[in-house]
Image 1: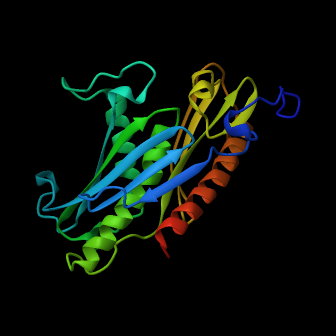
Image 2: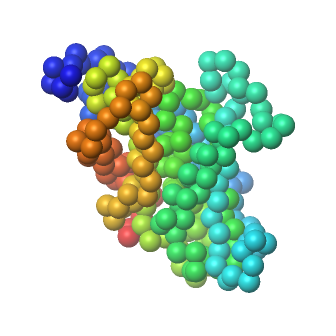
Length: 247
């Protein structure tokens, strides 16, 4: 079934197939964090908070480079059914997402110029309606930037060691239609589910793609990546608008 012949779905917020949900990034949302951001993708809301601590993980050895990492969790009432807190060990999904966020942030951070500091960005989902990992990556970058600017102003670091921006968006195929930025109902019925992480220099940081109910070919993969890149470009622009970042 071609994109043209497939029935065009009714989507949340009255958007088109190639349109994201309303996105709002609010920096400085937390008083005690070194940097913070509330990332809102439609009804999905993720609170991202960055904390800078002296020292680096022991496994880094004698390296003088800094480290950037992330943690991810969902509040119990963030989903329709209560999500139990992870007291008895981290769930595989949470570990996968926090590693994705950490990798994405490190892709645009010059750890040599960070110095012997560790930045931890905590991403806590306060309301989930699909795309929590993409909102986490996008909001985490804002929180990281705010924390590094504050550290520079306090004299902890000499410069903001970011080489650019990073953002993430989901794409997918639902009932034969290629969609940008899937909400939960769309994601739960997706034939193909993808996530794209991209940097402000136009390069791909990570692609996650799965044939949930159907397979896809290279031609469709290319179309989905093009669709995702449009979303990435819009998110990078929103990041610049709320932070004043200049590469």
